[in-house]
Image (tube, rainbow, N blue to C red):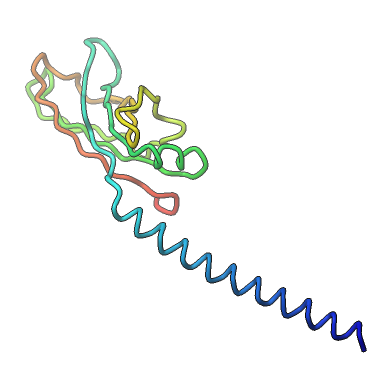
Length: 147
């Protein structure tokens, strides 16, 4: 009889711990989603091109916590660059899905919450930029579940 009572007590404690973990998971998930909504998105802070290069260098500001999270999850970026080419045509090149972990280079910390990274966007078949390309760019954050 004593063994059954002890087993019931253990089961009750296990159930209580499981419920506590569920509540904690819900609270932390809510806090994390709220915090993510308040965080800044990646932004383009500079674009350069060296004559004869096969790519355009795009420097991005990324929240440091996002950069760190990207080391363990598939966060990515999609960057487009529009410019005036040597052929006097408007060109747009697209990075496609670029992994923050694999396709960017950490340059430095901008401040405690933000890092600067370099992403090389290939020209592909597009003609190179002219001497005054008038670069414009967009960046989209791609989360692990999004292709």
